[in-house]
Every structure is written in C-alpha cells, then in structure tokens.
Image 1 (cartoon, protein in one colour):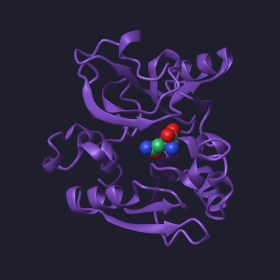
Image 2 (image 1 turned 180 degrees about the vertical axis):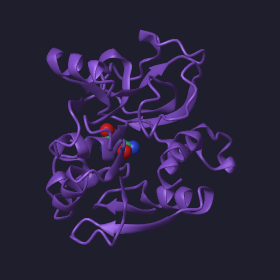
Image 3 (image 1 turned 135 degrees about the horizontal axis):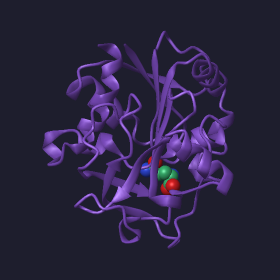
Length: 229
Ligand SMILES: NC(=O)CC[C@H](N)C(=O)O
C-alpha cells in the first residue's frame, strides 16, 4: 500500500502526516504537489490539514480546483481510498466527494485544543477495530469545523451508517457540552456512501508520536492499515 499526501500552497500538516505514516506506522508515503496530475501509483490519498490558499473565500473552496483534484475524484470514483483531515475534510466536501459542509465554528473563534471522539460504527475501514465505548483524545485546530447538512442529508448519512466519529466527553458521552464547534449531531467524521472516502475534523497525526504524550490518534490511523493486510 502506497500513501500519497497532496500538498497545496498553505498546507501545513503534510510533514506531520508524512512523519507519522513513514516513521511511526512504517508505511511508504510520498508528497504529491497539487499542480501535478500524476498520482505516482499511490493507492491511498491523504489530503492534509492546513490553510490551503489562506482559507480565502471558504476553507478548501479554491484548493478544490487544483489540477490534482480531478485525479483525486477519479481515484475516489474508482473505489480508491481518500482521507481528508481538517482542511482536507473541507477540500473533500467542496469537491463533492463527501456530503455536507463545514461552516464557521458557532462561537466564531479558532479552536485549538484536545477533544474526545467516539467511533459511531465499526462498519468502515477507518473505524474497523475501534472500541465503540471508549473516548479517543485527539486535538482539533480549526475555525471552520462546524459540520452541517440539510435534514434529508443528515437522515441519509445516519441511515447509511456514514457517521464515523462524534465529539464526546472524556467518558464517551456524546453531549452538547463536548461539541467544540456546534457541529450537527456532534459529527466529527464521516465517510461517503461507497465507504472509501473519509473526512475527519480532528488531527490524529498530531496524537501519534509518543514524544507528544498522546498516541490515541495513532490507534485511529492504524485502522487504515487493515487494508494492506
Ligand atoms: N488545521 C487545519 O487544517 C485548519 C483548517 C482550516 N484552515 C480552518 O481553520 O478551519
């Protein structure tokens, strides 16, 4: 399995992602510049966090038109795996690869802190072996992280089991107080109907290296490696 991290002007979590996949998870991983249209044989594409195009207009709205995105969409439509983390999640909803939108946080402030997540289902590669009863501690860092959809889409993604992660408290309770940005139904991560495209607002790559004192994010990312088994 070869991973590829797409780099836009303003991406800032590309190096963290490469570090974790290469040195912590022991995977082959390359960077893919957004102007390229060559996926270099990557099987699994990651759109990293950051501030692509300075978040002008709307986070992810300009990056979505980068040349490489046609190839990312082609890859996803052919069943290939794609994960968007934070700004990457924003790019994927702007590209129409994931349902819904990410609005400005309800409190209008940039959020940078640890939050807790609970996996909502084991029916996806990303959540395959996660403990549905426990809270995983992972940091968020965003201004536009409030997941939102219309009622019909919300019903559809819940009925299809596409909600993968919800914000919860340290005990795993999904409460309003544990919601860091006003996301609809505490939604922190979803997948597409085909279950091969994932979006997650928090940053598991920032909670993977033991040097940082928290490796809960690593448990999440390790799920993705099941595809290589
Ligand atoms: N850490 C990130 O990826 C930031 C996401 C985006 N730029 C925001 O602030 O909403």
